[in-house]
Length: 291
Ligand code: PMP
Figure 1 (cartoon, rainbow, N blue to C red):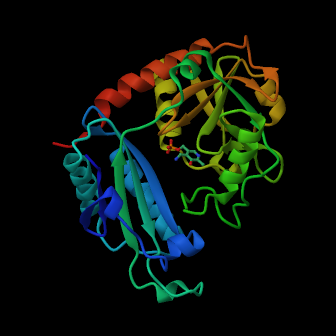
Figure 2 (cartoon, rainbow, N blue to C red):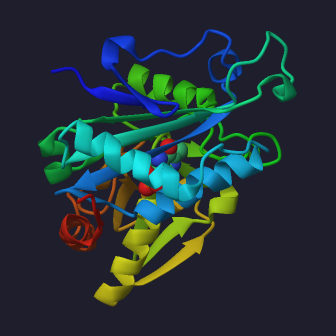
């Protein structure tokens, strides 16, 4: 049966769920989104995702017309109606319907869409053996222009980088900021391990404040491995002992080759493997139950 999608307080089957061609999300990429997961009937890091959604909206000066509690309830109802326990949830809040001009004052009410569906992951063998990735020429947006910390509907920067990865035949791309420091990937944060210390770029270097990133940092601390934010160059990645990516969809996934350089032994390292397992155990048990 077709999935049911939340659109502005009502539920529609997939074929009937529609937005206006005058919606500024469609016309200008003017809006924000979130990607959340549920594991085993529990929404993972629910508060954090809802908070980030409202923070993204605040930065683009858009007031979400329902409260955080109502937003949470709408997420739970979307999962229950679709009978989904292990799901990927895409939440979109666009500026809403306006005219053909840019002015957001012409959009009286933001539109809210919640889609819950099953999740498609990278193939299992990539979790086992690791990814080969490249760095791409497309740089991360300047923070002073469209700040990468906003999870905005304007993902063209990331899509350009993704096209470059596709052309190179690899599943992900590492993006650098304007100064040439490592920022993040098109849909994931990046970490390296060097001499038993885990390092990830400062988010102010052009990365999203990843929710998986934060969970992984605290799991690493619990494991007794020190974690820090830092300034990373391609040199640091090439010479790392281990490298891995984190994200809601990807979870924790090892990287074994970057720009043709083998990372460490060219197989997922022990810290990455342990974090992958600890993350999974934590995700299965820690979320907010939907009933
Ligand atoms: N960076 C970018 C650009 C992303 O789109 C995502 C996925 N939302 C991430 C990092 C990972 O963030 P999270 O762990 O919160 O999903």
